[in-house]
Image (cartoon, rainbow, N blue to C red; front, side):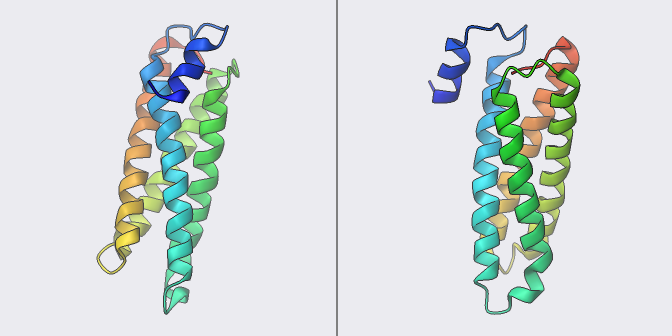
Length: 141
């Protein structure tokens, strides 16, 4: 059992019918993606010609920030399903854009390929939780 799941299960408030596995997957994938994006940005800056990777660095940093914020909000019982859904949608968009940018460089830069994979996985986890919220009408956190 992951720590995120243990925290959800020990919180005194109910989840309101939201699948804890979907919440945990979203939190964990957001945090993993934020780490991958931060490391990818750093690797891009260490390239012999980092100026050609400026767009990738910017996408990485934006995606990392959105993913971290999403993980934090989803971890709380915010009580605002509209805000949570909007943030999940923004995270999906940031991940989709970052993945596309990293995929452009993935053949020459293996770190970009790893980052793109993390972004696609996070995008999927956010989409699944957002869709689940649409069926329950409740905020997960």
